[in-house]
Amino acid sequence: MLTKQLHPGMGSLALILWFCLAGLISAQQTETEQFYKITDIVFKGNKKTKTQVLQREMMTQTGDTVSVNQLELDRKRIENLGLFTRVQLEGEVFKDGIRLIFTVSERWYFLPLPVLFFNDREYKFKKLSYGATLLHLNFRGMAEVVQFDGLLGFNPGISIQYRNPWILGDARLFLGLRFFASRIQNKSAEIRGVDKIFENQTGASVTLGKRVTLRTSVSVSLGYKQLRISPADSATTLNPTGFDRLPEAFLSLTRDYRDLAFYPTSGSLLQLTLQKTGIPGNRFIDYNRVSVDARKYFKLGENSTLAFRSSTSISSGTIPIYDRLYFGFTHRIRGYFGSFFEGEKRWLASAALRFPLMPVRFFNLDESKLGPYGQNLKFGISGSLFFDAGTLWSSKSNVSGTGSTINTTDPFMGQTRAEKWLYGYGIGLNFHMPYVNVTRVEWALNDQKKSSITFDLEVAF
Image (cartoon, rainbow, N blue to C red; front, side, top):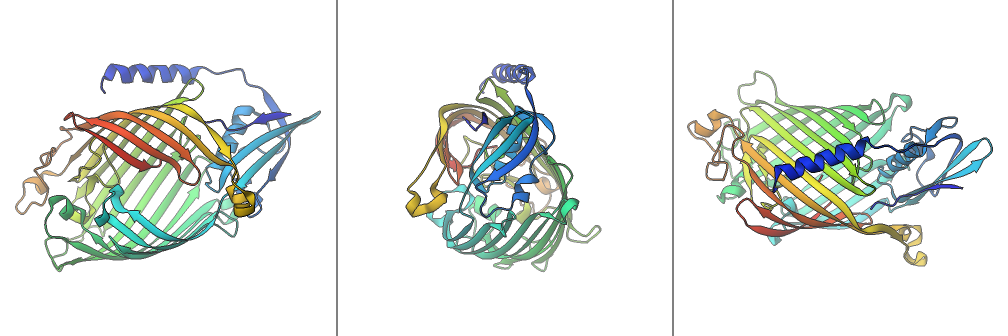
């Protein structure tokens, strides 16, 4: 029997270049591969998930002759669905070929839960949101997501979302719908420590995309958002009435060659997004944004990974203060994790070396209490060395113009070019856990020689 299962496990520019060279050399080293003819493909354990959901993630089909590496990539693509706690692959050897058996362990899909979380990754009581969510991650057994959120506390609001990853059969289209209403504290005002300014937002959007290949997709999103400032402040909105109406359009391209989306060890990711807000020629609202996120992962030996990321967003036109770019909320520079900076253009670059400390193992809880949902739960620990660098800048007119609202007292000094950079580096532990995938504890030192310890969820990139 053939069995293939999962066992996952700046300082100086010269050091990074050395690691990069080592990664390139490792990536070019290939073993002699064995190929097998596939006579049959069987799925087990998917009691709720339709078999076609798993089949459409696979490149391998019955009758193909493939390598073990390609079969492992198929297994990981099924794991990337996020529907299972574990995906195992076995091959039964027969005279005329191999019979593949995929065994999946299904997770909880329907989650009516109380919600309690801290916004912007700030663990402060004032950033606490609470409420309830109704979430189904596998509606109808077709990997469709239906979600309702109702929140109080910080940034109260409601939202309803529906996502279908595959519609119209062979057309391979996907669909997303969203409606939301919320009251959000303005980030720019928060950074300055001035009187609280709230954005009362209501909007809806629809996304239609096509999965061109298993690795490449394109999508178009159309949305409408209206925003009113409280207390009323005509200087905070683009329209002097204090009420902005914001039609939006997004065009996105994604090429995802990562092996595992939640903890990549090899491959690459490229995401390109073009954003248009307002109607061309509109007197008040007419601005654009281009965002590029590029990531590359080199395998070092059997279980270690060298990872690189470059993420850039460039805005043009008159950007409202409620749609600026920031460090300190979603995007952070480790070493400046608790600091907040704003601008209209952003560049974040990162590098990391990840290595196993305790290989991922799977354990089972009492089946009489949790049934199959307490089976094949993972736990493991990996370490990391990382480096982050980032910069923000803005257009000259918004830095030096009359009535400028760009903060010129932060380390970037309201710069109009990407000249001043902040950076931090350090070490961390990644805990591989069921359902949340990765929990991180990291120690970082920044360019001001100040250190900090942070806790966060999910892999950094």
